[in-house]
Length: 112
Image 1 (cartoon, one colour):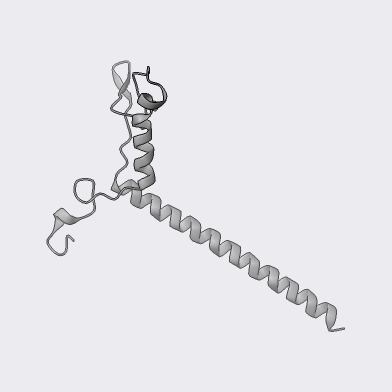
Image 2 (cartoon, rainbow, N blue to C red):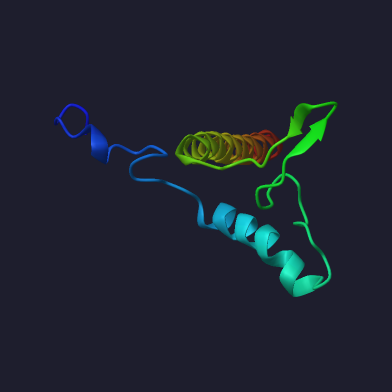
């Protein structure tokens, strides 16, 4: 979109966001969990995924909530696809080796 002169339409955290539905569900579940599962709780169930909780130790920030954005989603997709492709190639390669081994043993045993 940048080449077309429309940088505002690019995929980024400030323009069109790409986020996993599962990641959004996890964040919303952790944010809403105290009200539904523990009505007496005053803070979120997870310091990492929860609301806006800030943990400070000795006056310094120790933990902030992690916002999952477009870059996180795209990096996750790249790693997921490469892992799946590797597993597929590994399994098909070994299946072919197994078939060849069976074929060779059949040929060796039946050509005498």
